[in-house]
Amino acid sequence: MANEKKTGQSEIGGVQYRRASLWQIILVSTGAFIGMSFIP
Image (cartoon, rainbow, N blue to C red; front, top):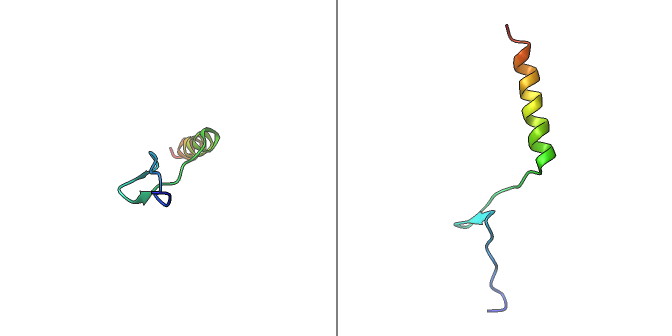
């Protein structure tokens, strides 16, 4: 029992997902918006 690993929301079904912070999500979305604004 001491060696049991706790599974959080980021690790479901043995798959571990990476988490992004809020500033990273905002930066990527604004970069995509700026890129799309140059397309006529």
